[in-house]
Image 1 (cartoon, rainbow, N blue to C red):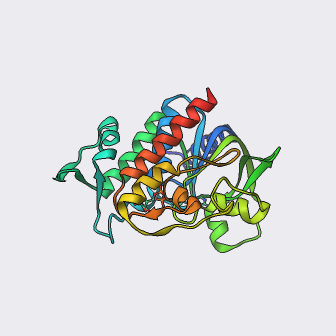
Image 2 (image 1 turned 90 degrees about the vertical axis):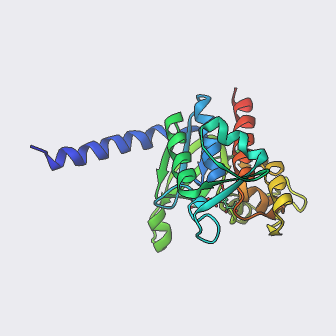
Image 3 (image 1 turned 120 degrees about the vertical axis):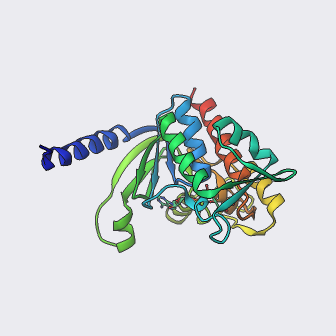
Length: 257
Ligand code: 48F
């Protein structure tokens, strides 16, 4: 006979263990879009202690919706190597343009990152960062629902050697850091420069170039990198997102060695 209390206890005990294990990390990733998932995948595969926090119910960020809800995405030649490396199949549409189902890519990235060892906390939002010795040293987290409802509930805190802002267009981690600490970022203006309009070719190049440490302890990837450094947007072409996540992971793996 199934015991309902045993079911509840199994969930509670294993969640609490998972959360407790994530209170001291090598890398805390905020945002489970394509760049964050790829970064998490490579970091976990390299044996780093890494966890991801996303305020939404489902991970995958902007991948699911394809282009204007047509659930297909494009990956250009440069990003195809990562699809191959991770074992995704894509169809050649025209020379240099590969197309794949966005649900396949989103769910596959989540699955492969978890198999590599990434711990994922969905429904959990970053609301602030921890500052130690003038560097970002962790996250202040709360339930995504608490954030949405604007309830007055104090958060919990975790420590991490590095934080990755992979929150997409709003660059929420960098934004909160600038707003609350008034710090100078490693950008042309010292602040958040702001994303530019659509130019796919430049946007893809910018995304990878801009994926780096923007303040001691804080890295940015994906659209957050373009928002912070002032790169162009590129729409539903995803090679740059994949390459951005891999670049940040490789840099962090080197620094954590
Ligand atoms: O926007 P998103 O998919 O991030 P990305 O890796 O990829 C961008 C592309 O999807 C697309 C594009 C490419 O052509 O332009 O937009 O840069 O995913 C960002 C994730 O961050 C989560 C949010 O729910 C989403 O899943 N997020 C944002 N703010 C927070 C957060 C927060 N404060 N706490 C937790 N998660």
